[in-house]
Length: 83
Image 1 (cartoon, rainbow, N blue to C red):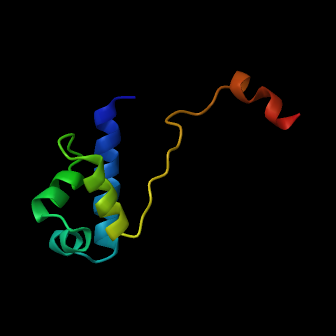
Image 2: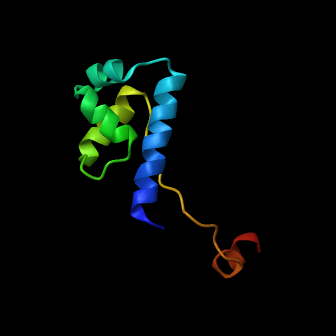
């Protein structure tokens, strides 16, 4: 999977969460201790933004990051799970 797709998806999810909570970018920036421009860059999935900024925005939105596989496992990979 292309790494830019991952940051794009993360930024989109962050933006959706912010909107669902009824917050402006400026409000999230204040909660996270960042500038509005940094929140914009996070929502755009920018590579130039440090992981710490992503973490601060997620924390400001009461979210956490969860790592999940990008693809489904093959039958060979899960063969012994249901025996």
